[in-house]
Image (cartoon, rainbow, N blue to C red; front, top):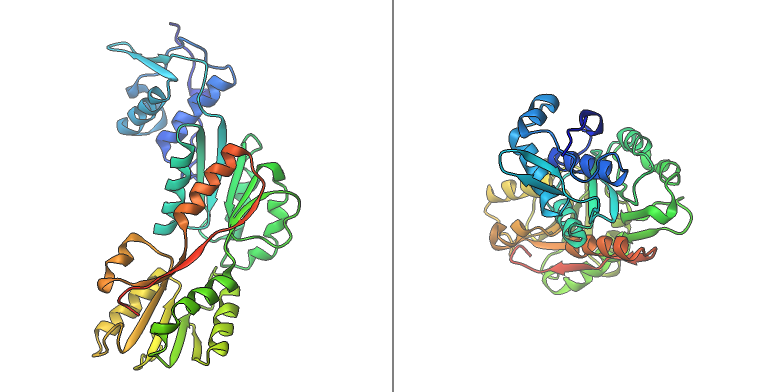
Amino acid sequence: MKPISFLEYIEIDYYSSTPKYLQLANSIAKAVREGRLNRNDTLPSINELNYNFEISRDTAEKAYKHLKSIGLLGSVPGKGYYIKSNETMQRFKVFLMFNKLSTHKKIIYDAIVAGLDNEAFIDFYIYNNDFSLFKKILENAGDDYTHYVIISHFLDGGGETSHEVINKIPKDKLILLDKLVKGVDGEYAAIYENFEKDIFQALEQALEPLSKYHTIKIAFPEHTYHSTEILKGFDRFCMQYAFNYKVVHDINTEPINHSEVFITLMENDVVVLIERLLQTELKIGQDVGVISYNETPLKKIILNGLTTISTDFQQMGEMVAKMIINNKREHIENPFYLTLRASL
């Protein structure tokens, strides 16, 4: 075994949400794929990695254990780690970018990782609904990924020109997630929600429990990344079935009255609403109804169960993995459903 100069092969991107141990593992695997590291080359010790890259021992150990688990590294007690094989199991290198971190986004991420198993390296980025950061990350991403999986939601109006940035990605590598982006052309893959149709049909499924209320209010902040198509579907439902209705921009100050139903899109808004309701004598699910957007495991428990309307995030992630593995370029509308619980 021969020692090698290793520092030049390590790439740690501090904008990336990819865990540092995976960035370290990805760097080693990339060097193997490109022939810069070869079979029997020895790797730096845990202490050397800790010193040179200011990463913890746990991070370095986790990276090496991951590479051992996929057959790339071997180890000799007392001597350290070495390249065991020039063959990597990873067929794919995936650029994955979400608008924010949330419980339901984690469900998507975990489903993608599980679906790809050990066949992909994934670089994960978060741009916090900020178009300028979205653009910067994409422009600096490079072109060596096999797939670019992107959720496109913005708070600052950048969505109007986001298609110009996205169109620079080769369409055979692009998968749009959660929504279609107007202006993106060519043959690319997408797994998306039909926001107007989805909320209309979900509320139709809830007609019976909704019939005991006279007014439906939807909490839709003035500055939000949510699609205005949701409001179109909400408006159409209320008009067709003769409900009084209102779009609420600030849940903190909106009056809460008997026989009203509140639909909350933001997780913070449902917390504020519940806190305010618990300070009244109104009974949730009898006097006032609550419907929350986006199913998460905790909502099965809150208030003996929050009624939710939600796409299937698990299935969305699973379909992304299948599209990558099978190299599909389809547009698939992800299912949306109502889960009735005690809060309605």
